[in-house]
Length: 526
Image (cartoon, rainbow, N blue to C red; front, side, top):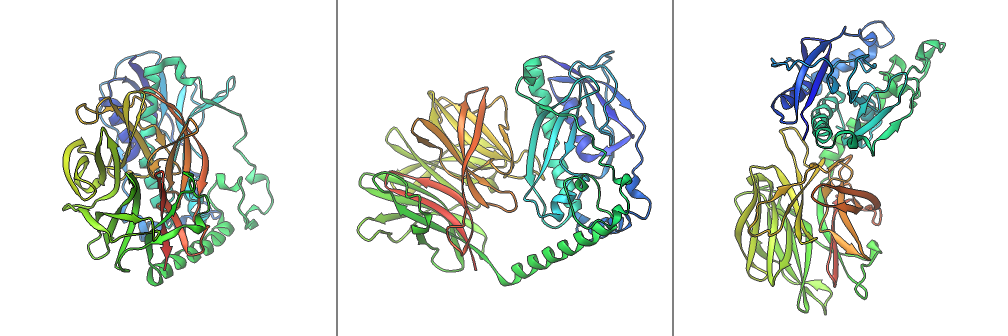
């Protein structure tokens, strides 16, 4: 791995916390050194003055009063002291200033910066109720060459507050810069081989040339490159008030409840008609059931699942045997309860023994359980990962290795739904788990979080995932795994499962199947 010399572009002695965190990460990294800090003149913000954006400024103050108490990642902090390593020509310039203009300075790998799909960051996404907010990492172009799209991160949009959305999006995406610098150090010029060329276009849409522009009440892709004018802010305020009212009414008059749906397979094939699936409910409305896994053992089939008591908000695990004659499940039995919350009972068989990896996020571990007496008696075998905020660990065996797919929140304030990690080991009972060289391999709220076991069909490998944009477990998406090795991972979205097969369902988020049964879970609104 080559050690890169990095120059950092700033326009003040203080930066937002998420930018300061990038510098702190690079200071301790073993793949780079910071060679210089370049100060440029700070550009004035024309939206902080004048009458045209008066309502925009007022609304920002109201937003900060209503929702700003928990925001902390946009607050200014001093740039940390750095022992600079002198380099006349840095390998890379990182732009942490407020300007996105190209900086004329020589650097082997150009200037990298965050670029947003709308401006200000995360503002229009809240107004338009977009399910996710996108941040791009780009290599800036100049007058002679086009820029490159280096990476993209999508995270769920905060539904209510522009300030909270900008705060969380900035924080959750800041490690994208560090991760890609590390990949550049590992791969050199080959890092750029699969990067998309950005076509040059003029960002100035000519607002000033339009007569009476402030009388435009409609939103367009062009207007979303600027803060809303007074007229647009009036329209936006009406949309936001209507949305806030809907949230409040839903909170007081409805309650979502998870349930499990199941179907017997037809000649070994999954029944694609979800409207025909039967429903498996919790014992009363004080509980819900979710995260179904199904196992065939001999002539019998068993449903493993989470049950949660609303009174304690703590989940525990149960199993129910399927009755082939009645086409329904027998009385469920408790199989595992800990002092902390359990869910996602991923049960699998290896060399004649059954094992289970339940989700134990509250314990900060990924634990392996061994079945002592199938299907009801289990005991903890070992801890696979510790001191980690991880959920939904899913194992798959391929190429004489065990692969663990798991969702991890690396830092406080990160989301469990945004990033997918992969680990590998030859023997899951004995060996230490090795992190994939490109972790996190997926940074996308639409496709990252696991939704059940990987599925091998017709020679192809598929990974079900949850689309958590908008809200948790909104729908299931199916990703085809194209490459899986210690140094490569690639997948593509090939399908999705929505909850529209029934009028009273609003989400689906787990899919599993055996030779005899297929199970999913869903949210029933009541």
